[in-house]
Length: 299
Ligand code: MG
Image 1 (cartoon, helix red, strand yellow):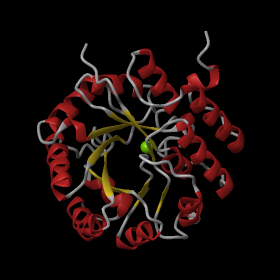
Image 2: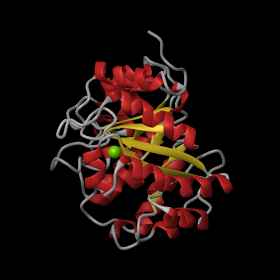
Image 3: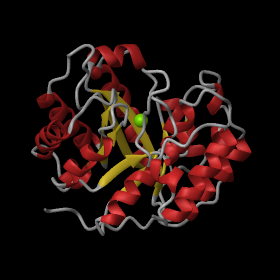
Image 4: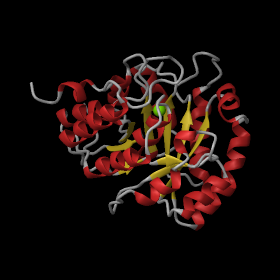
C-alpha cells in the first residue's frame, strides 16, 4: 500500500470547532487551547474567523486572541476571511495565513454566504490581491466537494474545475470538505483523483466530517492517493451543524493515532494532544468525541 511518509494536520478546533459549540467560551480558554495545541507540535492551527463582529458573538474577540497567542516559528495560524474588511483585520494582526471559503454546491452557497459560486470567486479577487501584497499564504475551503445529498447539485468535474480555478487565482491549498459527512471511501478516492487530475495532489487537503462514522476510512482512502494534508479538530470539537448531537469534524487524536500506528510522521505529540482535548472538554463541560482521547493510548 502506498502512503505518504508525512502528513500535515490542519487543526481546526479553535475556529471551526468552537464556532459550532453551543456554549460561549472565554478568551482566556481559547488562548490556552491554542497555546497547548502549538505545544503539541502541530504545524497549522486555525485560530479564528474575521467575520463581521457581532454576527457570531463567539468570535468577537478575534483580534485580541490572535495577538495574545504564543506563535511558534514555522507554524501557520490561519484565520477565516469572508471579505475585504476581514482581510484588513487579518493584516492588522499580522496573520501569516488566511482561509477563504466557497462551495461546490450553488444551493449551499446561497444558503451559507448568500451568493452564487461565481460571485464568491469575484469577491475573492481583491482579498487575494491584498493577501499577496502582504505575503500572506492563502488556503481555500471548498465545501460540499464530496456532494450535497440534500440538493444533489454537485458535479465532481466542477469540483475539479473550481479547485483549479482557485489555485490559478493564487490559493496555495484547497481543502475539500465533506460538509454533510455523507462520503464513503471509494467516493472519496473518486473525487480526489478527479481533482488530482487538475491540480497537484500536494495542494489537496481533505476535511472529512465523522457524522456517519466514515471519516478515518475516507482519510485513509485519500492518503492512498497521496493526499498529505488532513483537517481535523481536537476532541472532535464542533458538532455537526446539520444534525443535533451528531459528530462533525473528525477528532485530531483519532487521526494522529491512526497515522502514528502506520508510521506516518505528523510532528504531533499524541499524549499532549490527548491532554489538550481533555482540557478543552472539561472547560466546555462536554463529552470528548475522540475515542482515543477518552481511552488514551495504553492498552
Ligand atoms: Mg468542519
